[in-house]
Length: 103
Image 1 (tube, one colour):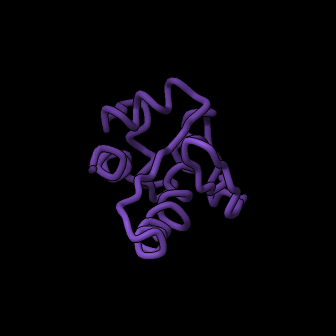
Image 2 (cartoon, one colour):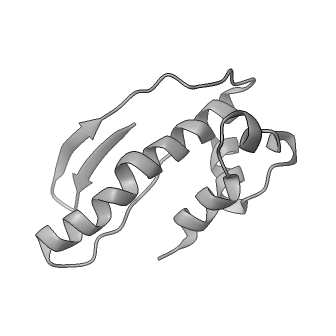
Image 3 (cartoon, helix red, strand yellow):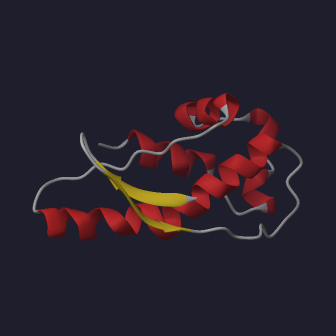
């Protein structure tokens, strides 16, 4: 995960993070969704009010994925094949969906 401030004419890296996952992921999609949850909770969402205050204007958080399947699951908020992810990784796909859909 990395957090960057970017606009039309700038791109500034603010921080990066990696974390060992607490359970074994059985697919790349499962690992991607777990990483997206960690990034949103620890870096993305806490940065929004800070940068809105510093810049004195509304800011938006963009979440980019390199997996089309993970992106589709997060966009729909459902994944029958990953219904175990809540128990094994403590990740709610519906929560991620709500965060990326809110303005």
